[in-house]
Structure formats: C-alpha cells, structure tokens
Amino acid sequence: MTAPADVNHTFPDAEIDELLAFGTVESHKAGDLILAEGTMAPDCILTLSGHTDIFATTDEGPKRVGWMERGQFAGDLSVLTGQRHSSRIEMGADGDILRIAHADFQRLIAGNSHFSDVFVRVFAARREFGNSRGFAAIIVIGAAMDRGVYALRDLLMKHGVAHRWFDPADGPVAGHLMAERGLTDEQLPLVILGATEPLVQPTPEQLAVALGLDLLPDGATADVLVVGSGPGGLAAAVYAASEGLTVIALDSLAPGGQAGTSSKIENYLGFPTGISGNELARRATVQAQKFGARLVSPVRAASIGRDGDAYCLHLVDGRKLRSRAVVVASGAQYQRLPIEGVEAYEGRGIYYGATPMEAQLCGNAEVTVVGSGNSAGQGAIYLASVAKKVYVIFRRKSLRETMSEYLVKRLEEHPNIEIIGSTDVVALHGEDRLGGLTYRCRETGAEDHCDCGFLFLFLGATPNTAWLPKEMVCDDRGFVKTGTDIAPIELVRAGWALDRMPSRYETSWPRIYAIGDVRKGSVKRVASSVGEGSVVVSDIHAALAESGS
Image (tube, rainbow, N blue to C red; front, side, top):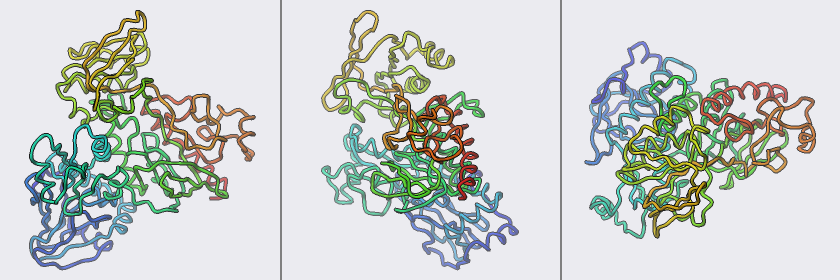
C-alpha cells in the first residue's frame, strides 16, 4: 500500500486460516466493485489472492491511494463503528477476497484480543493518514460567518470526519462544484457526500444520520445508558462495555464534552507533551466502540421517567430508550455574557471553544478570550499561535486564583498576549458579525474599546440538568447531589424506597448516577471525571445484582 507501514498489516497464512471462520470467500474479476463509497456498516475486506484497489476522493477527484495484496485488509474506522465508509474498493486483478460482515467483525474483535489490537491500530492510523492527505469525499459549501456552516463543520471536526470547506467568496471552486450539480446560492449551506445526492441546508442532526453517526432505533435498550460523552461518560462507557454490560452513550454534539474544545491538555497523566481534548475523545471513542458500546450523537435528552423497574429516557426528537441503570454525565456548559444581543453573534464572531476550526477563521486577527480557568488559558495560548494579538479578560484580580501555574506563566511570557484583570466586557458592536467590544475596569470604572472581531468565552459553568426530573435532588445551582451529600429528608421527598443509602455517585433515584462536572462537589478536571466514570461501573454492577438484573 502506498502509505507508511503503520497503516497496513499483513496477516500470515495461519492467521488467515483463523479469519476464514468469520467470513465468506468470494471470487472476483478485475474491475469488480467490492465496496462502494458511502456504504453504512461496511464489511471488512481481506485480500486472499490478486489485489484490491482503494480509491479516495481528493482535491483532484477520485484517486487510487493504495492497494491490498494477500493477507492485507481494506477499510478504516467505519468498519468498527458502522458509520459511512469513506472510500471505494475495487478488485484490481482477478482473485479472491474474504468478506467479513459488519456484525461478524464485531464478534471477531470482541472475542480475540490480537485481532482486535491489529484492526483498531491500523484503522485509526488510516483515518489519521487520510485526514493529513486530504482524502475527503465530504465537501461543505457556505460562508465563513454562516451559523449553519459553522454548526456543520463543528460536528464534522468534533467527530474527526475528514472534509473540505469552500467559501463561495474565496474563489471559483465552490461555484464550479455547485454548477456541476445544478445548485444555487439560495440552497446554501450545502454538504456534498461523494457521489450521493447533496444535502441542502441540512441540520447537524440530518448530517449525522447521513454519516451514520446516529442510527439508533426508537425503543433501543441497554444495561446502561450514559447521557453525555465527555471524559467521564466515555470512561463509564469503556469500563461498562469492557465488563460485559451493553452500553448506549449519547451526546448533544459529539464525544469530548467541554474537554473536547481544549486545544491542548498538558497535565493529563501519560501525555508529557500534552494532548488535545478532541484527540483524547477520539481515542476514548474508538476504545469504547471496540468493546461494543454504541456511541450516538448529536441527540438531546428531553426527560427521564420510571418504567416499571427500569428507566425510560425520552429524546427531544421523540425516540425512547430503556435501561436498568443510567449514568448522568451531561456536564456543564459555558455561560453567555450577560449582555443583550449576545446570541446574534454566536457563530459569527463569538465562540465557546478554541479548536483548529476557529483558529482557521481568526488567523492574523485580534482576538479576545474571556475567562480565568484552565480552558481559557489553553485557548489563549493556542490562538496566540495564529492571531495577531490575544487579549485575556477576566473579572478576578489574579489568574492564579483559578488557573494552573504553568498556564499563567505561559500567558505572562507570551509576546502576543495581553492580560487584563478586574475587567468586564460590557458591550458588543457589529452588524452582520461581531466587529468590536467595550470593556470596563471593575476598580476604576474606566471603559475602553477594542476593534476585535473574535470573542472566545470560557465563563463559569451551568449544569446541563434541565432534562432531569424535578424530584431528583440538586443543589441551589442545579448540580446533582449524590451519595452522602443527599440528606435523609431529601431522600424521603424523592421517594427513595431501598433499605440502603445511595452509593457514592448514586442520585436520589436508585441506579441513576451522576459523575463529572454535572455532580455537586466534583473536581472540574479531566482526570477526575475519568476516574469517576471508571469507578461508578462497580456501583452499577452491585446495584444490578441487587435488583436481580
């Protein structure tokens, strides 16, 4: 294959013989289509004789990017996840293949650690290789400051789906692509999915279905439902699935949560050079899926209620899911500025995360970051690598009250960063998009103006608990109480009927647990959330055994 060695693997004859038990041998002529681009739940294709060719969509059109000989297998992470396959596979010369159906492939990797390690490692390497080379059949067309475009690209970026984006204002490419398909400006934004029919003004939810990110049927059941796929939720999904529980994990956007918007996490154990929140989430997602967990997004929880001895989760789109145990890992969201009209600039100059997508928009511009936590510091340092100037504005007197020392020092030493403490942003300016802002010193009352078109907000945390029942005990800020934080009288009011008290992460409803940022008293750090997500699984096992599940 025309790629680095880590994106390929050749099975020896003895291992090929083992794999034969999981699939069907097929004979093909040169030129036969083996697997079409865009196939959902794609099969795993192992070449037995002859060779197979791999074609990907590039900037120059379809291009052969590799081939597979005896003992080599085609495909990428979509073979594991069941999502839309991103390449086309043809028979390059007369020969035989082994076709392992998606369901049989899942059975294979669940039962054999060696094959699991090989397939997962190679598939992940291929996804990264394809992204780095621009092998992307998905094209987004629309203006940079179009909210719809931002939402679609945000979904693709957070899911690690390779795509290309063309703004009609930046050159003729977008116009040519639209003309070829008979599309007009009135239909923007557009998403072109290879050779399939383009999506016209799709919502992120519609795009997710088209990509296979959300194929969850109404009425699906699991041992454990995990609501929220940030670090804590992903950890719970990994540990629960690895211990034999069936798991469905949901998220309102994509795996990663708030941590997924961090450009680099440098104090997470085991990554001495740091790791981006998005990359950490991608790795955990693959890990959870390897063990059989179903990760679905973007979907939103609307409410949850008792259903006999189980729970029924109602989604905003009307679907209902059922399980005996629920992990509430819905996290917290950054707060909006308390200024009239903020919503009008969201996606048009105001953002709540600093990822490569946002950095692409604000290159060589002046940028303001508001916040004093680690996420604000990480975002400011990352944006300073592309922006002309970064202003860090916060209400407190000192960043050291809330930010890790290593980040404070980097902010202070960076030539492109100006730190402005004891200050509030009090006004926003601009017509179609953000054009500037006014800020006021809390000590003197003096105001100043900045012609800054990009504002990144990392303000506080509001728990995502609106979907929980009113009977579930929370504190006065909305964070969920668990374990010994719940007073006996609160348990009585909530209808607690068991002879025991709630376990450490259990809420006032039996077998519903809260972990991570959404939980009262939790430490708002990635490592802490991961720890809670892993530990809660032992409590779930005990509770399910107690109830006879």
